[in-house]
Length: 620
Image 1 (cartoon, helix red, strand yellow):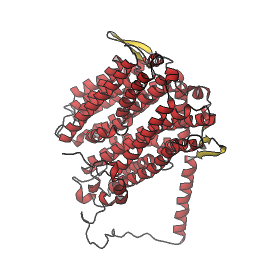
Image 2 (cartoon, one colour; image 1 turned 90 degrees about the vertical axis):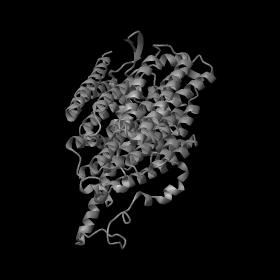
Image 3 (tube, helix red, strand yellow; image 1 turned 180 degrees about the horizontal axis):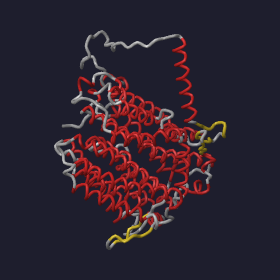
């Protein structure tokens, strides 16, 4: 009960922020700072609530709260705490970034923006703490869906934004209908918690339970962006929304779909007992997760618009999380202790990647907004050489690109490694997971190619000075501060993943009803997935000698050593650096004919996987 007070205070502050910022909207920056002050205070309450819940001070069971004539169950356990942390951190960063970002469009008023954004955050936080599938869930979902719909159509003059917003709202309402309909099918009443629904599900016929779980998987999968549902709305919506909103969409809103999948398949469904087949649903989740990461990532390589590239990439990264959850569910049903141990590693890897993705993709969308703010365009073919004018943003983009590509010691490396290793090592007992791991490993290479393209065309290629719509300069200090804050967290996640793994394990240990809860309540998880300052380790079926281990700090030390050795060798020969003009392959002048553009990058790869689709721009 004590955690409900700071949660409701955050709701109140977000509501006040929506009212006050919109009332002062004629003074754009003043309204922005008002919004920031109140939103960051609300974010602080969300972070504090999340930390308390994740460290053992949360709720054991749902508590009914009267909202008008209805009793709504709230549950703030360790799992909810993890997702409240994501929402709180990204809310603070987006609110700070928005103050100067809104100068990008002086022709658009900010009243609607600052009214909708805090309400959107309120809806996200409510979705992760309301523990029903009826009135409370519906209220939170509609606040989130309508506020985000209005944010997507913020640039009303753009017809593509209007189309993207309408499509988004229609599909979100379809997802809501599926989820609420599943609750009714399970026999739920107003005030029933998910635990209550799980107990009722135990008495249902297998056919009814399968139908209800399929509806829940479709509804939450649509929200998360799982293939092929994500392609219907996500790229256009993320690209149309203002960049601070896109950061919240990718980093926090998509995670509400992941949160729903975890609640359904690791809490509600196992309570149904023998009627629930974890191998069937785990295999399906793993298969759809693999398809999502593969197709979404290949589609991202084909994009020329920076935000559409990041949007399709978000689909791919969600696929890794869903693959990890599916593999964990599948392996947890085994009688073999080593396979159950791999299930522990898979679920920890999935939730670690959810945390990592929230930070590095939030950072990347803010960088995408910075490109538009500084150069007046998001078209990668019209950018290039920005490292000269935007060195701080370039450094942050490099860090985030390494993280999303899973390159050591970037933050995505440890989480992807845990997910892929758990599927590959499971081949000694369940070979069906091995192809999923191989595809995920290949897709990581494609992700690297995608972000070589993103970083190269935006920051190191030549020609932006000729194509930019305005004089190029680094973004204002407040926008940099928001990005630097996320970058610091991203760096910590990459170099010290054991701290975050232990934190997630503690949160799961304080989540009553979790399917693998026994491992986390007793600390037995550490025997299957070791986490220490020396790195992470997964045991395999063949014993300790066949396990997998990794140490990001050791990888960083080796990289630094190699760089120092290379520098020493170069200098020992007395070599000198000389600045010369860029070689233009025999051409004298740099122009549109001699610039390196998107069309020529990874052309063979894009042609080979043309069948995966992924149009490069919204249709006019």
